[in-house]
Amino acid sequence: MRSFRDRDYVETVEGLFFTVIGNVHPTSHVIAYLKYVPSPEGKWGREKRFKRALPYYTVPMLLDTISYLKQHYPHYVTFFDELGIEMSAIPLSKLLKHYCPERRLQEMFEKPKDNLEAIAIDLAQVIADEAGISINDLGITGSLLIDIHQPFSDIDLIVYGRDGAMKVKEALLKLYEEPKKRIERLPKDRLEELMERRQRLFYLSRNDVEVICSRKWNRGFFKGKEFSIHPVKRDDEVEEVFGEFTYKPIGLAIIRGIIVDSSESMFMPSRWLVSEVKSLCGVKVEGLTELCSYEGLYVGVVNEGEMFEAKGKVEAVYHRGKLDHYRLLIGSPEARGQDYLKPII
Image 1 (cartoon, rainbow, N blue to C red):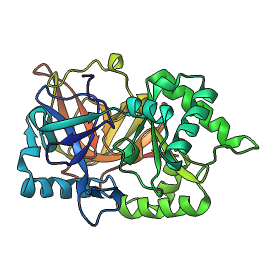
Image 2: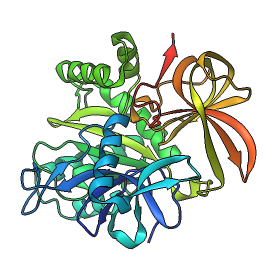
Image 3: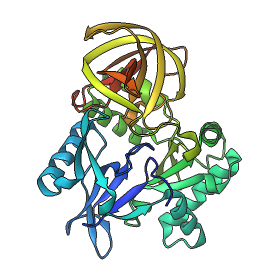
Image 4: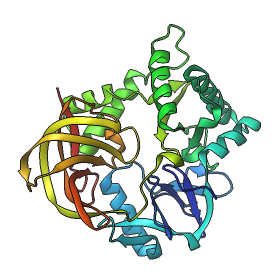
């Protein structure tokens, strides 16, 4: 069995579907959030119907799923001393099936079963050809991965590896500008809807949302379908072992500083190295050198050399038991969705 990667899916013995978070997991559990639950009124599935447990990935909605699990399936909620938080996670003994995006995409190429699958593999082929990567470097996630999609479903692709992700980003930016418009950016009405929702859900100003959305390259439109594409690390790109680093909460803060390294910002969790950090509000520490975000909205939104402002949870980071540095975490339960990251331009 290959390792668990970000945006894989797992199915439990009760028929719950979870989305895997990140590539680093304890040996006994896979850390994931609840996405689909069986429901006769659900819009997804065929003979067996499912509904979304998490309409949008925000921390308040994530906390709602954890409350639901505590009430109905408490064995899927665990406090991890290493992370300093309580999180949904599936014991391997309760895992029924592990869904791998790259394998599912290959199955679809061999025999697409419906129009959405046909459009998805056409999109994957165009992207692979234009980026100069193998189709084996791509995968499919979301409802298509677990085969409960409907005609209204979006297409959510995966690109594996840093090099492949950079090539796909470059290729998509070129495709958006080509005259024949095989692949387009989101239509204006859809983009407006998306910006209004993000402004509402993330406590951001209209200007902040516009800047963040203008930097998003991984959402578009192809043959009448909205799609997204998400970089995920290959196994050989993951050096960290769960428990090697431990995190202790200090408190909430608002800080400003300069990004000195954004090479890890396209993955989940997103990471940036920072310098010249100044505390504007909240707790103050010396040696804060990292930003980390578990909120997908902020993937890749600040770049090397730019100034930033961020609100989040300050954590002490220990490496094998010894204090290493401090970081600011965006997407923590303590901030309850009111944390943020934005460039200062």
